[in-house]
Length: 370
Ligand code: BGC
Ligand code: ZN
Image (tube, rainbow, N blue to C red; front, side, top):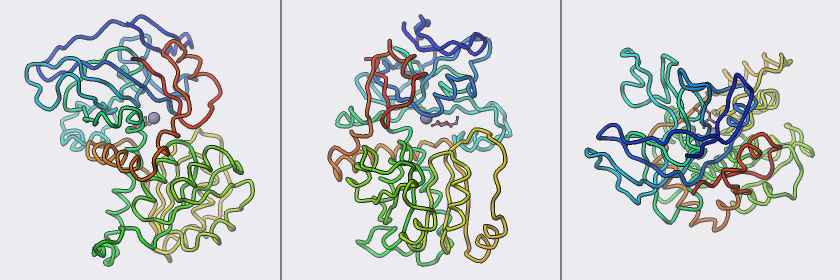
């Protein structure tokens, strides 16, 4: 069957013929892959800065953001049936008996570092015709989300982040007693750094939670990204025409920063204007470009004197997948057309190598397989 593979030794990315997988355990399901999204991680893998093939394989089948249809199930499968739509999770647990995270199904918090990630590290991914995997990694998707559910995995990043924000903010007694009929973040202000898919999906989560949300990104509008930000009731401010001080003055007390660019300098500069009791979440993974100068006294003073919390977050657990699927439905209902507009390109699998290595265009590129 067809698959898109990366060969690190020969520095190649190409369409290959890959053995078709078969059900091997009673809890396995066989999936026909429908769509696979392309993200920054994939672009790093195809430029050989990241990613590892499975042990013993000269290549890695790429692809981790996906939507599939169940075509066959093992004898002991109970949660899914042929015809169901499913989004498989990305990370698989390590084998270390002392890794309490993996042993409790929370491999997104793996402590040994020996997890695998399908399509990224140590396990083949989803940019192929068929995949076999255990039913425990499947997340069921309603048919009504067929055209947008490939965005589930990038949305899980924001879902895991905001769940942790609420856990952190349990430290504020009034946050634990939300008013009936009032959105949990009513009156709070969030800044999203970056207007890529992770940033825009994060902005949707934040607006939906009730945050007054500003997306800060490089280029002045009007363009697709600024248009989408407007559609969901958030404000777009361009770094080209607003300094961070102007951003802070426009927003007021910044209660939350959701960083989604991997641009470390602007992120740490933005930390200088984080507000009282504010939380700063990092989701981007920057390349190493060398040291930058920062006002660390100011940042540290603010962290202490303003009760700030800074944390990073990667990958996601099943709870975040379930919330992502529910939220996609909520976003489609609340902002008709907005979620679909995140997907700015759909190309067949034969063209995937070109899409992966070509210049990124639009917001989210999706490879269609079936
Ligand atoms: C994926 C995550 C993964 C991370 C690090 C991201 O692009 O969405 O699932 O954990 O890369 O490999
Ligand atoms: Zn990704």
